[in-house]
Length: 154
Image 1 (tube, rainbow, N blue to C red):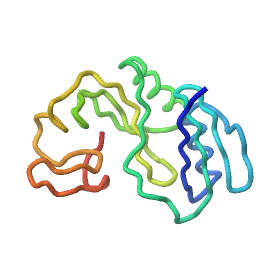
Image 2 (image 1 turned 90 degrees about the vertical axis):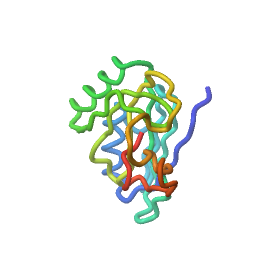
Image 3 (image 1 turned 90 degrees about the horizontal axis):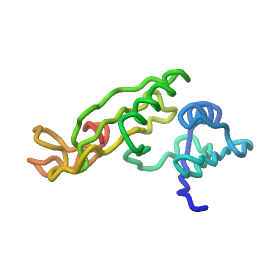
Image 4 (image 1 turned 120 degrees about the vertical axis):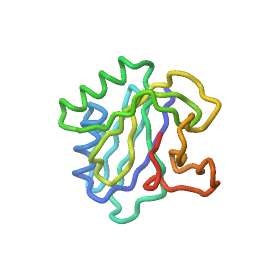
């Protein structure tokens, strides 16, 4: 079996385990002092959490791509039932794709997590709207780099 491993530095292991247990609907496969890992079947992911307060790296955002709008809605409902809030972005164009998505709120270390489906391809990075690029990309008109905190993200 192949899967991606994602290792994240977190400030508080207990807070992070609680959040990711809700996000993925699973408990850690292994839990040790300052460490936890999740073996997620869908999407195939090995998520490793390392308690290293103040050592978070540069990360733009994280996402879970699902097959269709029904799956986006089902995930949003599941997360709401577990106590996580979200912010909708429906029929938005970003990263050269029209998407239906939502952003998970209240992440323990400020990471940006999206759950999305691609509706169709786009010839432009963020569609017809004027304004900055998402995902910490390049502003279309000025060419200036933007950070995730300065731009809406995809």
